[in-house]
Amino acid sequence: MEFVGVSDMVGWLAATGVEQAIAGIAGFLEADLRRWPTLDLAPRVADYSPLGVIELMPVSDSETYAVKYVNGHPANPARGLLTVTAFGVLADVSTGYPVLLAEMTLLTALRTAATSAVAAAALARPDCRRLALIGAGSQAEFQALALRSAALGIGDVVVWDTDPAAAAKVQRNLEPLGFTVTVSTSARAAVRGADVVTTCTADKAVATVLPAGWVEPGMHVNAIGGDCPGKTELDPAVLRDAAVFVEFAPQTRIEGEIQALGPDFPVTELWEMLTGRRPGRTTAEQVTVFDSVGCAVEDFSALRYLRDAVRGTPWVKEIDLVPEPDDPKDLFGMVTAASRLPA
Ligand SMILES: NC(=O)c1ccc[n+]([C@@H]2O[C@H](COP(=O)([O-])OP(=O)(O)OC[C@H]3O[C@@H](n4cnc5c(N)ncnc54)[C@H](O)[C@@H]3O)[C@@H](O)[C@H]2O)c1
Image 1 (cartoon, rainbow, N blue to C red):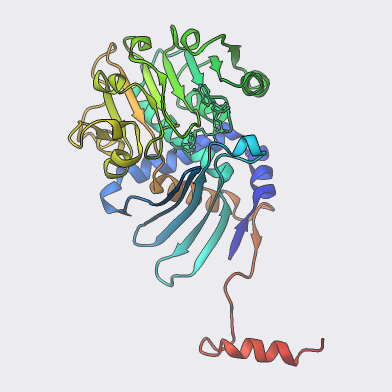
Image 2 (cartoon, rainbow, N blue to C red):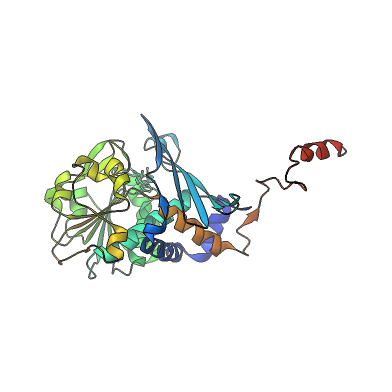
């Protein structure tokens, strides 16, 4: 049983490069999206409370099963805690044995970014230059790197956060990576003239981070932060005037921006666009929205990419999570044998 903890994840990422890791996961994800109908997927199991949500996200193919535990608690940073934390497991379908246990707080930021990259590569105009980043918390830098790794020409980032220290942190982290970063004086000023708008705020409320009047022809909106009932970021009019793309419609209709609209509001799932069943962007002036909520397939892709990437490196450890008795029917004998050992 292999284990990748936080320090090993950080070490692997520092050696690999965050942008390269995002691109690697995006490659796995795109391949998985192209075989979407073969995956066994259900909307995630969510436990809602006034302060947040705890979710379990299972998915499998004929060989591998994955499940992630993840929370979302927007008030946590005020208590010195992360909004989102996660861990996950890969298991062998033929034996049911878990084979990899991994931290997934960083891996979730990577896979959420990789999903934004896959969506933006297909939906944003190819001549994009400027990103408006609304929300400068844990996901922010990963999201900026994702758009660059999607081969968009994103080099300019204009960042806005209600917390000026968070916006300054993004500037400090992104400028050494080759971005030109401007801390905006308002959300309105950040969005004006942007090619891509990423909203990644955390607020357990029906918020209007992006009013419809701010949206310009040809924009791609990468909406990350609305991911739970009663927690959205976009003016519903933005969605009505755009082509809307989602990961998994049955889940997004409950959790995403489109929860504000009727059950028949037309959306396209990413896999349908990637396999040519449904169109993506059709004109340069069209506004496209990726209504991201996070889907188990992304964790499945990320965990399998990680398993392959760390194999044989110092960033993966063996742990004894599953007993290995000499006789598989004599589990009790393990205790008997241990009690005979000298104290
Ligand atoms: N779609 C997905 O797959 C996915 C994955 C991970 C996280 N998320 C969501 O993305 C969001 C961001 O996650 P995070 O880990 O970066 O959270 P975070 O708490 O670290 O950062 C959120 C930031 O948003 C800012 N903010 C809140 N309201 C704002 C507003 N109206 N305007 C501007 N800034 C505002 C906060 O000051 C904070 O800096 C959360 O809502 C989280 O649930 C979605």
